[in-house]
Image 1: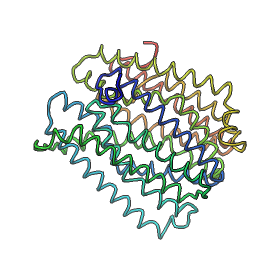
Image 2: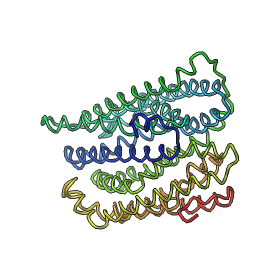
Image 3: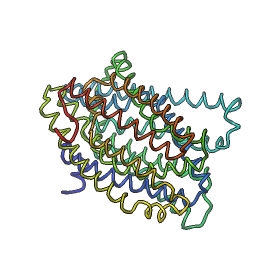
Image 4: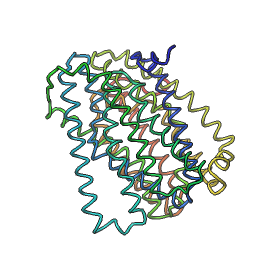
Amino acid sequence: MKLSSLFNSQHIRISTLGSIAIKFSSALFALFNGILLARMLSVKDFGIYVLVFTTVMILTIPVSLGLPNLITRYVSKYKVEGNLQAIKGLLIRSNQWVLLGLLGVLVLASLTYGVWWHRFEMAQAIWYALLLLPFLALGNIRSAALRGMKWVVLGQIPETFVRNLVFFLGLMAFFFFGKELTLEYAFLTHAGAAMIAFAMGVLFLRVKLFRSLKNIPPVFHNREWRKAALPFLINGGAQTLKSKSIPYILAIFGTMEAVAIFDVAMRGAQLVSFTLGAVNSAIAPYISTAFEKGDMKSLQQIVTKANRLVFAFSVVVVIVFIVGGESLITTLFGSEYAVAYIPLLILCVGQLVHTLTGSVGPVLNMTGHQAYLSKNLLQMLLLGVVLSVVLIIPYNVLGASWAFTSTLVVQNAILVLYIRKKLGVNTTIFS
C-alpha cells in the first residue's frame, strides 16, 4: 500500500492500523523525550518539568471547553446527513470559543501571578510552558475535525507524531552540542515543536476540508452545541484531573523527586494501553456513524474486533516489563530511577484491565451517553483523590501507583456493566 493511501484512507481497518502505527511512533518518541529530559535534567528539575507540563495539560480543559470530542461526533453526524453548512458553522464557532477560553486563562494567570504563584519555585517555567497552550488547544480542534471526517490517520499525525518527533530533535540538538538544558529551554523547545505541528494540522485541514467549504454559508446551532459540549467538558476535565492530580498530591505530601519517579513508571505503563488510545481515535467516528444508522450489530463488531487487537498488543508489553522492566529503567533513565520498577508493575495491572474492558469512553461519548460518563468520571476523580491522599502519605510512589490502578479498575468495571445494560453492547474482549 502506498503511504499516501494510508494517510488518506477512510476505511476503518486501514484507519485502525494506521492509527496504531502513528500512536506507536508517537509513544516511542515521547519515551525518548522522557529519557533525554531525565538524563539532562536533575531528578528534581525533571519533577518540576512534569508538574509544570501537567499544569498546562489541565489548563487545556477550560480552553478547549470539551470541543474536540463534540467536533468528532457532530462532524461525523453532519457528514452522514450531508450538512456541510453545519460543519462549517461548528468549526468557526469552536475556534472562536477556544480563543476566548485562551484569553480568559491568560488574563487569569496574569492577575493571580503577582498575588499568589510568583512565590512558587516553578513560576518562571510556567510562563514559558504557557506558550504551548494555544498550539495544543487549537491543534486538538483541527485533529478532531479530521477524525470526524474519517481521515483518522491524517488527523493524528501533527499532534501525536510530529510534535513529539520535533521535540525529540530539539532535545537531541542540546545533547549533541553539549549545551545545558534548563527548564526554560525545555519548554521553549517543546513550544516550537507544538507550533510546527499546529501549522501542519492547519495545512491538512485546509487541503482536506476548508476548500470544499469555501463557498458554503455557515449554519450555527449554538444552543445545541453548548448543551452537548458541557458533558464533554466535564468528561475531559474529570478524566484529565483524575490522571494528572497524582503529581500534585505527590508534590504536596512527598517531593519533586517522587513526582519524577512516578512519571517514569507511568510513561512505561502507558505503553501497555497506547494501542487502546490509537484504536479509540480510529473507531470513534465509525461508532458514531453506526449508532446514527441504528446498526448496533455493526457497532458491536467494531468494538469487539478492535479491543481484541488491543489486548493482544498489551499482553506482550506487560510480559516485557515483567521480565526486563528494571533493567530497562536503569539503562534508559539511570540508576536513580530504578525504584520505579515496582510502581511500573502495579500501574501495568491497571492498564491491562483497562485494555481488557475496551473502548468504554468512545462508546458512551459517540452514542449520546456522555452525561453518564461525566457523572462516573467525577465520582472516580473524587475516589482517586481520596485514595491518593490516604496511600501517598504512608507509601509515597507505591501508594500513588495503587491509588491510580484501583480507581482505573473500579471505573472500567462500572462502565462495562452500564454499557451492557443500556446499549446491549459488550465492550470487553469476551463478547
